[in-house]
Image 1 (cartoon, helix red, strand yellow):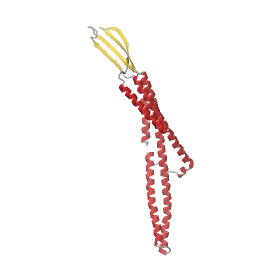
Image 2 (cartoon, one colour):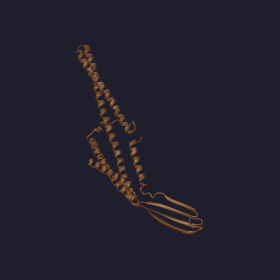
Image 3 (cartoon, one colour):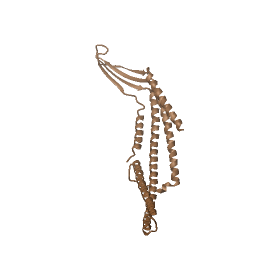
Image 4 (spheres, one colour):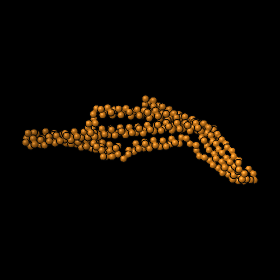
Length: 276
């Protein structure tokens, strides 16, 4: 089975890569055909094609932003892998520790079981009093309760590891992994994870910075071009072309978008400085 969180991180990365293809978009093509008495008593046929080319500056800025967003999602995916490895490793060590604890308690319980039997025989033979017999039996009962609690804790840890691995079919932990070199490897893994966290914060800052550029590019004019041809009373040969430019005159909404992107950039910058 697949881990849901890791699979969702992979799907988000694939989604971002797919959306990257939408950075350069010319929009729809407008094709119109008109027939009738347009310029006089004769029947005219007029066909025109109009294409909105958009703003080169805006599309370039959007493409750069999408590139940064893909980089961010890649780092987030690698971090999700690291998080899963860390959680599995931690759950594995917890299970190993509880397993060893249960083993020690069961060993002590076997010793106390013999001690209870011996204390009973000594009491029956008159070699020991009732108090010593009760003390041993009380210690045995306390150890038995602790052993039951340890077994429950072991089962809980085993279930937690099974949830992370998405399977209950795995080998029990080997005590040999408690070697010193393995522990140093865990410390190194934690350092690498911190580096990934820092890298993710930096890439989120890059995304925010390019978002500001993208929003500013909305002020740039966009272009359009078209071609038309016309026949007048079945006489063909009339054609021409035209170009247009669209300028955003009402900039209040665009200015608000730029201001909002600057705030998001400042927030990302503060988070990076806090992590440093």
